[in-house]
Image (cartoon, rainbow, N blue to C red; front, side, top):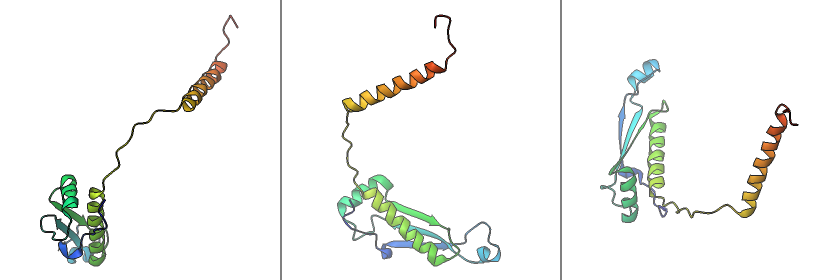
Length: 131
């Protein structure tokens, strides 16, 4: 669990570059693509336990490239959200699965369904000489 900790925006470094692809004059002249980088080692506020889990899952640097929107501001917001989501997901401890067995009733229902299905298929066959 991330214990409510959220990546502060001032610990994320941003770089803006020209976004490729279609868009004509606007895309050629404006630096709307955002490259956002969050470095675990430089984070002063991140709890040590969370840092260990995130480092194991994502490494020392979390990097995101966003050029979804035409607006640099909107791309920046999306980048911050994606970094926060990746860190949150990497820091979440999943519960271990306890193996279970099918109940006797469910086993009986499964076998009965298979028997019924086999009977339906048997009824579709051509009659043989001994029928």
